[in-house]
Image (cartoon, rainbow, N blue to C red):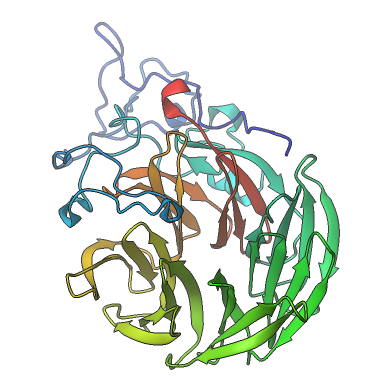
Amino acid sequence: MDIETDGRFGNKRVHNRLGPGPGGAPSSTTGKVCNFWRAGRCNRFPCPYLHSELPEAAAPPKRSAGPGGNVWRNPNTGGRGGGGHNRWGRGPGGGSGAATHRPPDRPCKFFLAGTDCSYGERCRYPHSYCISDSITMLTLLKGHEKGVTGIALPTGSDKLYSGSKDGTVRTWDCQTGQCAGVITMGREVGCMISEGPWLFVGIPDAVKVWNMQTAAEMNLTGPTGQVYALAVASELLFAATQDGRILAWRFSSATNCFEPAASLDGHKLAVVSLIVGGMRLYSASMDKTIRVWDLATLQCIQTLSDHTDVVMSVLCWDQFLLSCSLDQTIKVWAATESGNLEVTYTHKEEQGALALSGMPDAQSKPVLLCSLNDNTVRLYDLPSFSDRGRIFSKQEIRAIQMGPGGLFFTGDGTGELKVWQWVDAAQT
């Protein structure tokens, strides 16, 4: 995909933020900061107002870091990780060391809204969709008229696929970044995943299936209401439905079709997230619980009830399970000696959390991406939960998908799809 890096990231214009030096203008008698200085166009000398920000209260010292090492690894490697559970939530901030100054905590609101900023290059806020030295936005893909609910990049394909509440699936050419086709579904797309050459799309009362290599197309019926999540494991396709069931299909080479295999019942309300880890399927529901299913027997072996509101997303990486909820927490679960999962760490968020995704950064360190109700995505080092930056959007981001070569994709409630690249902060 063409790389069109936003060269306006950050604001490199420097104003005199230290105030007048010896022999300069007298200090302010009002105790107020000059608004013209803030906008970069004060020409008064002496100026009766401060040409520096008011001092802030000193922040409490951070806890010292534990021993180094990468606790989380890709689950496909079969690694067991390292370190004890007490390493969660500890450590210094950022992947490249502590910041020497306090950066702006948000981008320019006019830039974010897509309107002209009257301050232009003098704006004290970044004209960028992110505040982080670890990622950069490559390009913006526009076409959907409503929120993006799923993103997929099938193996071996040069096409990116996105599904939306506008009832369409769009195909994007990875070389040009242009929309290469639109498939009209006729109904809201609830989710989308790819597995090998297969593309699976969840819609109300059905799952649409395409084979990108053979052009075969199938329609799997059985769900009641919207299909909110899909997962593939043990040669089974799982679909999380609005009525609280999880339906399973098995591919038959004899008929070249997916045939119904099982119905996993137990949740009392809609199931909104599925993830597979090891020989377990984890399901998150609006009934405030997480259920653990044995893939060998398709039986529920544990119900996790520590969240106090809708559990929006679950994520597996190595021996840990992470879950986020509208109760303003992200919980980390670990297995006890008995094999049952228990909460080993709880991270508080001021906003309700909507979606989780995990991926390695440019230095192969594990990073958690957490979409929040305030239209941002927070980036956290793991296991320390140290801040790595934020992604900003016009509306909430529900779809996050990892790609090859340090790429990842986000889709927001306006229908905008953004392509991101991890960068090595030490080399920027």
